Length: 300
Ligand code: SIN
Image (tube, rainbow, N blue to C red):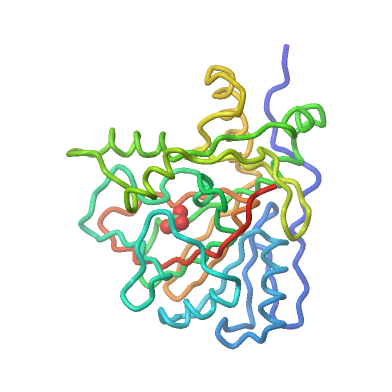
């Protein structure tokens, strides 16, 4: 006999972050909050600091009705920290750190940018800390983004399992993603970014499987369905079931929140404590998004 899986309970704490610069309205029990009463370009330096604190608390925050220009998006992002090197995409003309993610109404693809559960570019030695994303145009329904809270997922493992994971290192590489994309698409093999970035993505990097948040000290699982390709020192037969279990554990419904986008919205998330997924479910409609990524240090 073994226990059937029941929805996790206890230790959910998404109470609103208090700020004198804006109001936080939690989106779900596990994570996420809407920020009201602020326009991003108008935030003072203290307001930006408070926004970062709200982000560390809620892991994902979003604001409606911002309607930022590329220049405003770029300027706001720069105030969060230096830009990260984006592993895959090219910036728009005149704003090289504002990257378009656009799917046209007539575009049909089996593999979409960000279409599997992932944290951003973990195969880099220094993966981005924060990602910001804004919508200019979107489908009337579909195209929602979903996140999961990997710190909460870690806390809902037994102490024995947590202690077993703590010393492990996960190999993050884009190799399985490249191979899958090439299997799914017709025609020749694709390359992501320039040849150097492509090679770097394949080689990947080894990071702690349980990482400590650089600003809060909170432990979280550094796990990824798209890029976790092995566990240092383990055979693939040993590593794969462990990675599969951790992904399944982490993406269970209780730990997630889902955002229904509106044009003008801006959202940001903490890559050290979340995974996310942009679904491929809105064929026939145009979705126009722009994102920036903020540099992060080496995960510890
Ligand atoms: C991403 O993975 O950065 C994109 C998510 C989305 O388009 O919803």
